[in-house]
Image (cartoon, rainbow, N blue to C red):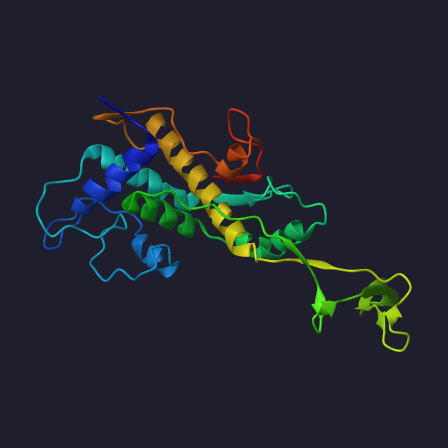
Length: 268
């Protein structure tokens, strides 16, 4: 039997074998929830696929190349089973553990996009896994740490001040207002400066979140295939090589020899 890592097994199945299923004008070899339409919907490929799709979410071949290898069908069934998993994001999760964030600006940017991350569907996970297997590429996660810049008004550094007030329910709160006194031309008592990130990190945070989900999904499929939950491989044997959950932390030396602590998980 051929020793093969799970990523290479996925690429072999989705690029070479599963396109043989449900050939145009041929019989249906197998059926599973289609995901290729979701790939184009989510813009993972950056284009729209205008071609017949088979039940495994890939473009069916027009040539009779025989039936898909039984091992590829096992992989396809394991990927289809991902529609039963759920995504969990812990409070301590951060996509940028290697960045200094003493002022909390990065943490605040991540907090604002958490609803978008929490709404990500398992169908999107399937679509990402299939697309990356077809393309033969892992999801990208690299990006530059943004700098800090002072908030300005009219081209000059701005001042801010907190004043006591009440919210809509009458509860005491602090309201932020302009901290510069135009009459005295001086900052008001207790005024302070504010800083902002020079670049929006939300897109990169989403990319890293998707990269983590992709790795977790690949690991889930590897476990299902290795356990024989959908049948036993006849021509391949999985190695223990699986993708890193948070490669950015490992590159930064935060993960030791294995994966760093993370707070994102998939569960059935």
